[in-house]
Length: 152
Image 1 (cartoon, rainbow, N blue to C red):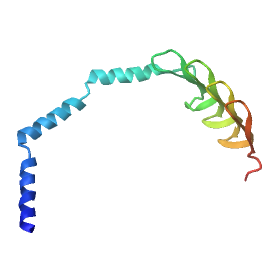
Image 2 (image 1 turned 90 degrees about the horizontal axis):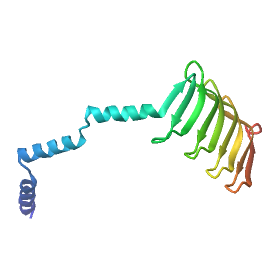
Image 3 (image 1 turned 120 degrees about the vertical axis):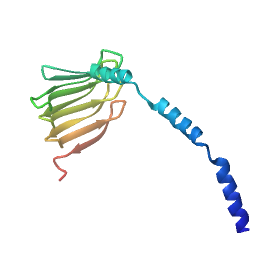
């Protein structure tokens, strides 16, 4: 019985082996499929660069294929978020706004649903939630209220 299994294993092994030429052809095919030409790589990098713009310490990121702003906000001298940062839908509706101070969330923050209704709002101090944060349903009804000054 063991002899039959050994012979069967050897036969299956020989039958499944490919010649060196066949293996080489498979490797060449895989290589051809995964090769990226320098021209296409440059185009990808160029397209990504076209989506981001920093001018006069104002950062803007645009939606691909459109000249509509996705993110916008001011930066400090070190390139950190500083001041008001906004996120917009493709239709131009402001979906969120958060205040920053030298890279940290610091100040008021508001987030909206895609329909424009308020989702939640509150305040940050040095990246920490402070004060009262309120959450609303998509229909605009208050669903939750938490006072983070009371949570320690």
